[in-house]
Length: 199
View 1 (cartoon, rainbow, N blue to C red):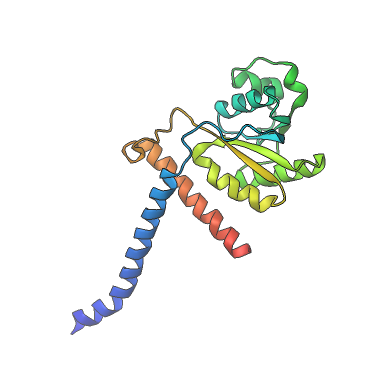
View 2 (cartoon, rainbow, N blue to C red):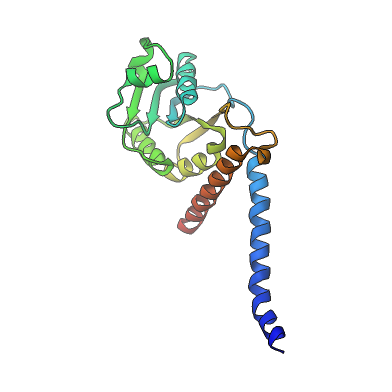
């Protein structure tokens, strides 16, 4: 009798926990499989090109896009205090060029939420209405969510960068990639929950 009572008490929460785990795993697979495998989407020009710091590939991609005339200004969000434009270009293995006049650094953001807030304020100061968002492919979905919350009136064109170190083919076999995707997926879920609760 005692065992039956314990089972009746424990079975419902165990079933809910199991269902939550299955949903989480299914969402993780969907999240990983839908990470963009290409280097960029669409060639149409936007008012601005916005790069989120976090990898030299992002900076070099942003500069290349600017040189192709796909934006009037390149804004780099989340730059460390004390780093100037020439330092940043050298770290990205780029030579200073005539494009320096069209590159603006933002020093206020410390995370993706801050990137979105900093960029929104800068976009308003320029009266810009569209931007091309450059960040790593695994980070793009959460970035688009945060940017959509911060500036719903702005047209955002995603431009994902594919880092060589992130192995998306058979991603579950690579411990580093698996940990990165799981961490980014959980952050995306928290951002989505915050967005849903604030709507």
